Image 1 (cartoon, rainbow, N blue to C red):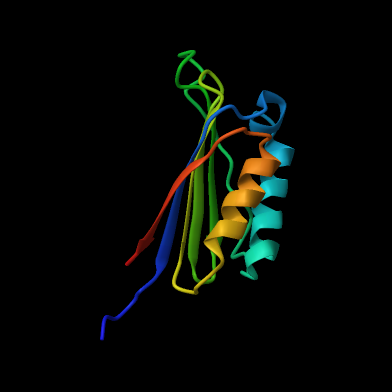
Image 2 (cartoon, rainbow, N blue to C red; image 1 turned 135 degrees about the horizontal axis):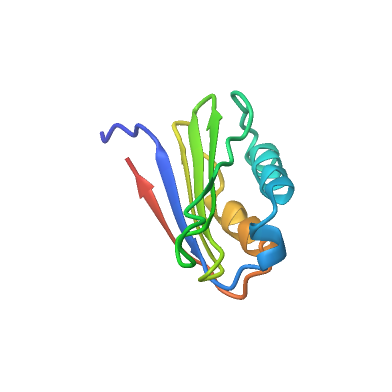
Length: 118
């Protein structure tokens, strides 16, 4: 029998709405809503530093939200209008609902994802 430590959902979200992905308030809302969607308890506040402002292609928010079962991370490229989001948890969750929610939240027409069972 294979032992499962956790589940990691890796999402590339192109064509994000710039007004959402460049808003600290909206990114906090995303983290809060995602935790509620999958029934996970936040551990501390969402960290959202703004990085790379000196280069057009690197500027944007990075996100870290610890959850009691692991973490949600995200990097948001304003130049490419693309989000790179990972959800890792030792607790099983419905990854397809996370994919659908994320695509809708960022108003993307496409999303590429992979679920790793670790």
